[in-house]
Amino acid sequence: MTDFDTPIDLHIHSSFSEDADYPVDAIFAMAHESGVSVISITDHDSVESIPVALSLTGAHPVRYVPGVELTTMFPRDGSQQHVLGYFVDPDNRRLQETLTGIRTLRTVIAQRRIDALRGLGFALDNERVWQRTGGRAPAATSIIIEVFENDANRSDQRLAEYFGGPKESDRIINFYREYFGHGAAAYVPFDSIGIDEGIDCIHAAGGVAVLAHPVFVRNRDWLDEIASMGLDGIEAISTYHTAEDISYYLGFAERRALAVTAGSDFHGPTSKPLITIGGVTGNHYRYFEELAARVRR
Image 1 (cartoon, rainbow, N blue to C red):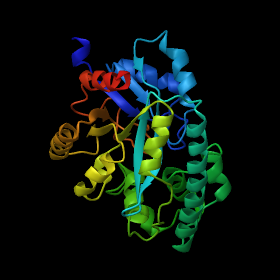
Image 2 (image 1 turned 90 degrees about the vertical axis):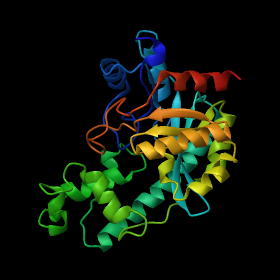
Image 3 (image 1 turned 30 degrees about the horizontal axis):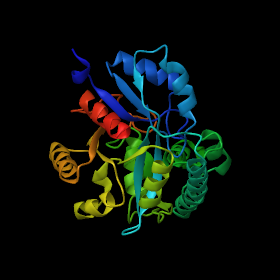
Image 4 (image 1 turned 30 degrees about the vertical axis):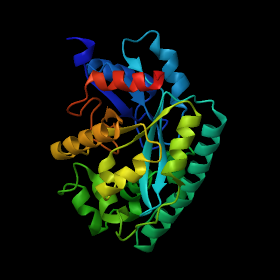
């Protein structure tokens, strides 16, 4: 097997993401065991993993791309959209300031979500949510786990199907869709920097900007508008995409002269138990080479 044929995974979360399970060294080991040749750890609004990962690269056969995932907003519909930044300088001042600002906004959203669930009659303990995230802005996962683990909710029949019922195998995602999804009972309007600002920030930090899991852009016609903001690439190969989706995004990338990336969005068994490192079809090494060539250009 040549490098050209080996799989890559450029969308992985470590425990520096508040909703992921594994430390950086464990991710390198799991990638190697899975036959993955190149990884990028792209934690939510955090570059804390980068110095740790760089310290491991000299003694590890898995290649590494410094990365981050920015939580941004598409102003057209107010939707949450994620922009992946690769080859970024973690010490860049603008990047650091932007990450701080995003985390502040996410903290406000988290409290609004907690309040919305309380309004529906669920019990939640703020202190336990923050302890679970290590002081980081709580993602939906940490809030949902508190709902599941709070003793006061044990007899709530609304949760029965998440324990031994049809929603058990992927309970975090299922709860999110039912309660936090757009238009759902505990839905909270999103607030963050715009996609364009996120792209500019990644460029300022010397990186390339890639739209993560584009299937979450509600209207494909809007992709041209997003690409025109200075996007460098699109995550066409994703665990969230059907074969038809992948075909469409590959064609879109070719039409717009965008790089293609492949990523699993691995978090670990707590929030996304059905996703594994490298567990996405079509994650070819050539996509990494093309991305690296774009950086050199």
